[in-house]
Image: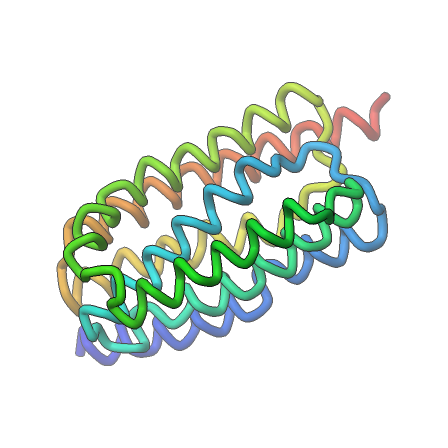
Length: 205
């Protein structure tokens, strides 16, 4: 019974992740402003998603238990591109950095970089993921502007993290993954709250 519920939640989670970043990307394309969006946060998330995807893939976990990571990773790349484009920061350095990132990713999933490296990297994902969200939260608070932030994106983020806590518990009970999803769920909810708060403040002003 629990396994059936877990499988259903996994499908729902993956479905939600297919559209998770789209509202944020659409807002960015419309406003062409990155107010309240932290580039540092995006890069930290990119690293975290990459490591998590590679870790699950190398350990041959059920695809349903982590498929949202490659999906979100792809969306994150698109989101990052638009942020860089809006800030006019697509230059030679960005191209070289992108190439180095792709090379690093390929080496991880093909185990050109020994799999044991992922064992050391995966515990870092929770603090890195938490840091990225804290940085994003600070950016919103410092700018006092949440107009460029998609509430739906962060709502979906919190929702998928919560569902993953259950599915991972049923599927593998991996403590590292459970900790990562729990922290992410709390911080995603916090970002959504502050973004909504400053959106309302902006309307009042």
